[in-house]
Length: 504
Image (cartoon, rainbow, N blue to C red; front, side, top):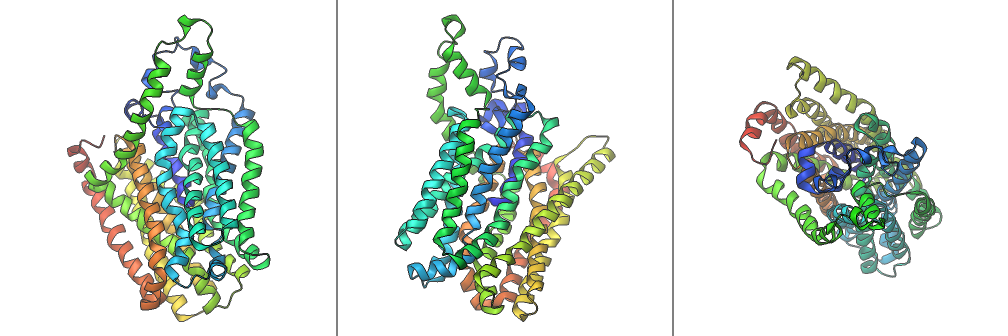
C-alpha cells in the first residue's frame, strides 16, 4: 500500500522543498521544483521575471491550483486503494487459480509492494527530465492496463506478473504528487493542499478492503479490478485535459525551445538537460542505498518504520483467515474488519500531528527558539508505546476468540501508533540529513520491501505460534527497536550528527 504512510511521506518531502542546499545537489523533483528549479535553471532567469510570470505555477489562479491538486489527489487515491482492495477476496483468488500454498496466496497481495518500492526511484527522476504531468498520466494509464491484466489473467503466474507491473506503474503518483503540491503552493500556503493530497493514501487502504469484500462476495474477485479500472478511467478523462505541467524547470525549458529569437534561447541547455538525465537517474538510485548503509541512525529509523509497515500488510494478508474461520464472517462483512486500522489512522492524523507540533514548538521555545531534529523524537517515543499495546491486544483477543470487536480495537490502537510514529520519523530524517529526499526515499523503499516480505511467512508463523504468540513476537521486536533506540537518539543524536558528513 503505500498507501497511508505514503501520504505522510509526501508531507515530509514537501518540507524538504525549500531547502536550498538540497536543491543544488540532489536534482530531485520534490526539491528542485518548489523553488522554481535548480541553480542552473535560475541562471537563465531574467531578474525577477519568472517570479511574476503568469506561466509560473505559483502564479496560477486559486481555482487552477485546486483543480490540479484535486486531480493529483484522485490519481494518488487509486493506487493505495488497489493495493488492498483484493485482501478480503484472497480465498476467492486461491479457489480461482487453485492455489493451496499460503505463501503464494499472500504473494498475490504483497508482490504489489515489491515493485511499489522500486518504482519511485525511477518515476521521480523521470518527472524531472520530462515533467510531472506525463509521468502521472502514463503511470495512471499503465496502471489501468495492468489491472485489466489482473482481471483477465488465466493463471497464477500471469496474475502475479500483472500485480507486480501494476505496483510499479502505480508508484508514479506517490513519487510525483508531493512535488506537484510544492510546485503550486508556497510553504505558508501548503498545509491545506497537502491535507487534501494526503486523503487518498490515508483512506484508500482503509476503504479498499470494505469495497473489495462486498464486490468479491457478490459478483466475483475479478470485478474488484474492474472497479479500479473504472476509477483510473475517470481520473484519466479528467486529468489529461485539465492537468497542466507544474514543474518550473521543464516549463522554462519548453518556453526556451519555443522562443523565436535565438538570442533568447540558452545555447546548449536542452542538450545538457538531455545528456544529464541518466546521470540524475543513477545519482537518485544509489544515494538512498548509501544513506542506509553508512548512517546507523537512518538505518535504524528506516528499520523501525519498515517493521511497522510489514506488520501492517501482514494483518491485511491474515485478516481473511482469522475473521472467516474464527468469527465466521462472510467475505463482505469481513472487509469491515479493516475499518479498525482506518479509524486508528484517522485519529492519529487528527491528534498525532498536533501533538508532534506542540512538543517541537515547546522544546524549541525552551532552547531559545532554535529547533533541533531531536525535538521530533518525544512524539516518536509517545507513538511507539501504542504499537506493542495494539499488537498484544489484537493477538491475544484473537487467540482467545473473544468478541470480534476486541481484535478490531487492537488493530485500531496499532494503526494509531503506526501513524503517530511515521510523521516524526520522516521529519527527523528530513531535518537531519543533507540529502533529505534520499533519506526519505531510503525509508520508503525499505518499508515497502518488508511490506512485501512479511505476509509471505505470516500464515506459517501464526500456525506455529498462534495469534497470541505470533503478535507477541512482533510486539517484542517493536519494543526492542522502537523504544530504547529513539531514547538514545534523543540524548546522543546531536553528537552523532556533528561527526557525520551525511548530516547537516
